[in-house]
Length: 309
Ligand code: MBD
Ligand code: FE
Image 1 (cartoon, rainbow, N blue to C red):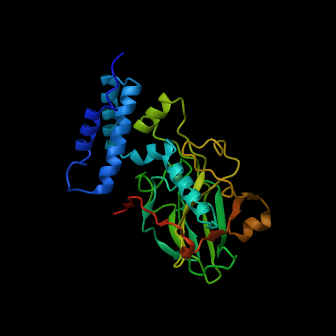
Image 2 (spheres, rainbow, N blue to C red; image 1 turned 180 degrees about the horizontal axis):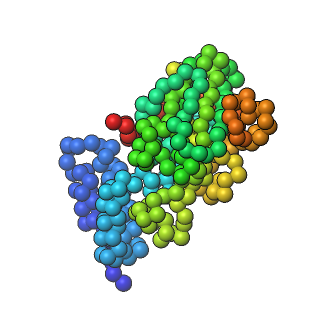
Image 3 (cartoon, rainbow, N blue to C red; image 1 turned 135 degrees about the vertical axis):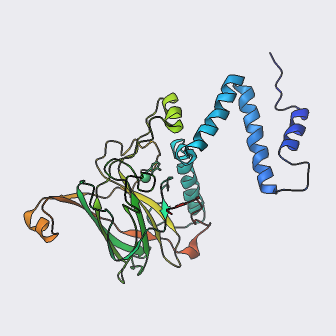
């Protein structure tokens, strides 16, 4: 039996030096976190008898992740992004804050500064032959009062499950808009029904998922940031009901209250009314915003964002 190193006084001193605890420079918060993470890693390596080969495979893995920018994809895959949501929920509950529309993860595919449109928008550029979807609703406060001028920042995948900007075959800001709700808090858009997303099959995220015996699929979904002065920034998604992966999301984002009914309209008059010649789908969904004054914590988005050049 090899003696356990991680808990010895010598190792504790070593980890203190590693994490800068023995100097008076740097950032105390960073030191505290690094100290904890390094301690936990030492213990993990020791308790699980991680071999040098396993260790160096993990180092290579991080490099691979960074090389293809998949750190933000692995994070939801390991449930960490959902865990952050659960913690925010728990803090709200402890503070007695009533939440409006449930939050759920942002994911790695947002692009800032999509075109800003008043009231009604068309998200698709007309090149995707997916089913036409009209989605609309009202942004309200917790009392049900409309929030005039709220910004509904929406983004979603095409029928291949791919997002513009990341998928360079799509036009700039395709399937992405910021919609300014009207005086009655109403927003509306026309788009196409997205398909679910799948992790790049040859990428490092899917490689780890394979080792865990897991798939890397998400159910079809539409992302939203909803914001207005005096209210908390809401990060959420709605799911397309009926999707095979609805309750088997590799990113764990499906939540009660975020699965609106999708109504298939095949009535000839309704089709004509919309100026279409094929059946279409409709979703009605209202957002409820929590006042900023009741926020127990800063729920402002924090993620590093991509801006389309
Ligand atoms: C997505 O579209 C997504 O929303 C998340 C969370 C992860 C990968 C792809
Ligand atoms: Fe997504």
